[in-house]
Image (tube, rainbow, N blue to C red):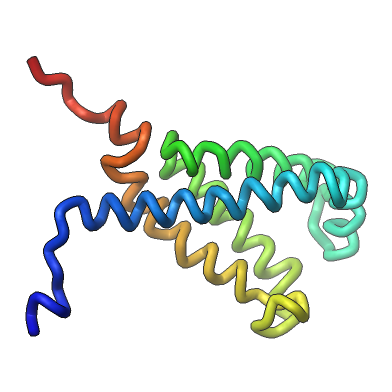
Length: 144
């Protein structure tokens, strides 16, 4: 029973971090591209202004850049703790400015997606990308 509840899988944590950062990266990248191409920067600015976000024009571009760039960097596993922290800050802002008052369900503008992204970004911020990443490859000591 102990092995069932506490499996010892080689590279288990690295595999979890890989799956988490790639999936979160894809979602962030897609949402950044949506803000850029579908909603447009001007439309994103108007939405953020209506939600009460300060400096909505700057915030719109900040979100577009950090979601596209951050999503790509998470997929690659490069600068993961920093990118995850910036993305986490974005999601906390999205929670309070946009989603908290709309309940749980995303189809009502709720916070379920934002909450799940926050839950996934916390371990990436604290643990990094793991060994199966560019961060892991850069950090490995060179052996002769």
